[in-house]
Length: 432
Ligand code: ATP
Image 1 (cartoon, rainbow, N blue to C red):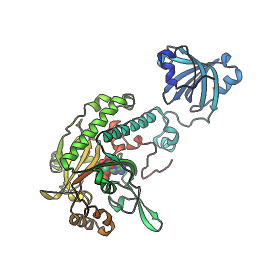
Image 2 (cartoon, rainbow, N blue to C red):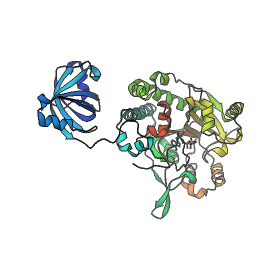
Image 3 (cartoon, helix red, strand yellow):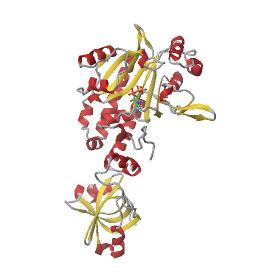
């Protein structure tokens, strides 16, 4: 038996005229009389296979003809030129071994979104989905490369926790051997604990939010990339976020152009995103919204409609800084010159895509942290371990969280965030 090689080998200059064996899944199949055409797909691409009844012999030809879409075969043959074949070459089969003929594939064109979500375990193989998973992997690689270069240490915080760090209402609660347990909404408090002496740490973990809001940008489980930086103020934080995003967006533009094109985002558009990103205060965002006709009171959180209006016409991400205290979590640092606001910034994606990064400097005063916990109806004793961090080597620090799917939604111009993750979790769905 000839060595099994990736289908891409057939398209190499030296491939022409070679005998080789490939294996993979059948993307399309068409039989016309004595000739069978298969499109065979493996991790490196697709290759047209042509099989003649007289070359294969009757039983082998009949078996190959019965292979369903997404069935699996191994093929030995010779690479030949064919102008009509995708890529201009085909493999003329001398032998086809059926590995799994498969049952009729249930997915075809023009099916409803709900049906496709029910069949997600099979739909994830489509060309568009595969491009998305590859792009996502490429994006995560780019982040890791950036963090390695910046000496940010990867750490592994827990997912099962005893505190609902971002507020009880949106936490998934479960019974942890008779005590309340929560699925992590953020790893931030643990990253703060791991900050000394590493100075810069990050974690990539799933976060869980029991948000009932059915918006096109909320999942109940998402990949959360969180970073914590010691000795960092608001300017240092926005600088870091800018450099990071420009670096990863340019890297995927350069390395994953094919996937980006296929998903509808020309790589040049990502390359045109450069630092510095514009920054406006929450205060000016409110003024801007009012001038656009919004009846918006100071102190409210920016919702989907407001964030969209602020960036719809923009090609660059936009930082909004210094939010009202009440709209944000208990651990954010009070602004030095205004007790009503915190040193927090959200980065909104361009083109109306809304919040992609949530960032802030962290409060260092135990008194203020305790006060803020009480103001939110939380007993500070529950956070004693966290408050301890302010008792031992309490230094200025800041950090942020970025939703990988939120970023991908903008990058790939998807209407709904569920398209950016293989098995989306939303209030109405946690299967398959
Ligand atoms: P939003 O106001 O948009 O619901 P948030 O303020 O609750 O977001 P943070 O707690 O700051 O978000 O979380 C940091 C980042 O995690 C967000 O900027 C976003 O990219 C991502 N994120 C938060 N919640 C979700 C979610 N439900 N689904 C997907 N990504 C999310």
